[in-house]
Image (cartoon, rainbow, N blue to C red; front, side, top):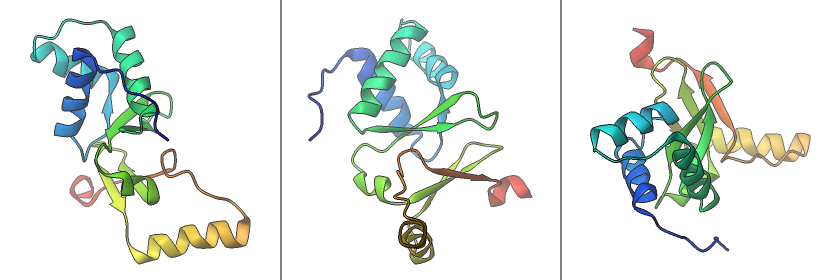
Length: 135
């Protein structure tokens, strides 16, 4: 059961930004920059608070940035299947590639069956260079 949603203008703006960039993980700074371009006045604490609410509502998932220290956010609202497969994040451009193929399902099945580990797809991300960044 999902938590009850409390919608705010800032939360809706943040979700709108993430929806417009569905195939890319965005940092808080990216989101704040887009909010500024939209002439939305807020502060970074509010942005973090709203992102936490969107994560709790399973509309957004969190990835680590290429430095491993910062968080990146990806919209999954309306795409609940996104919580049932692995993702690869490009370490150069932050593009997100969805691994919803049979081979990925076989791999995750192996991890659970042979090693007893049930993966949490909202927190499990592989990292590498996408084909565009390798060129």
